[in-house]
Image: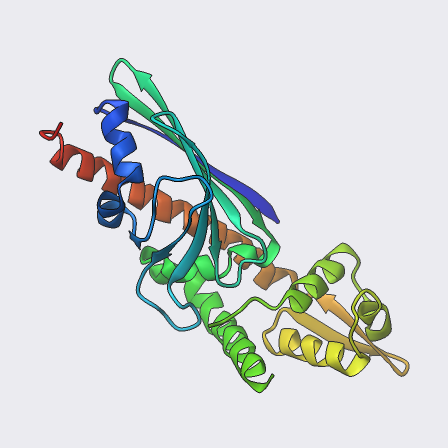
Length: 149
Length: 100
């Protein structure tokens, strides 16, 4: 049960502009999530979204690679993820503008669980409707067990 | 904060690698008492992730495949997340095209 995600999309904009959107805190907040990002390798930061039952709405990250305006990588560690996953952006200038490649890798086993809590559209899917009560119960028990310690 | 419990994740991995474990065998890799492991198994069982059946006086545990398959599909939900966000990035770039 392991899967990596890969996306490629061409934006009609120069790499420098795309790079700014990927590395500017305010810009990131507009298209991705509120954050404490800084373009510095080793910088620990968070993405924050609205908390939901069983998920505190925080993703912990660390910048691991920075090569402007070509590539950027950070770890991506949400609650219930056993190990951090890794998000990598690769920019390539093309005639039409910039080809952006996004790789989200390192999902393992149950690791991807809590991530789905932040997916707005995910709540509507049948898969989630079916699994959600069960997983919410599991997470609630987690909290109860932690509280007892 | 709902923290992932590493013991339960490891239990699931163990059961996934080889079904039909008894508690003793499951407890061996952990520095934990057998009752502590049983408690973790109960949580997994109550969540519908693990089933228990008795063979003689021994309880054996097995993963339930269906819910775990669903969980793996949640990575697919993440796929939708990024597709949406990359679309939002495109809209952001278009609306800021006039800037240097």
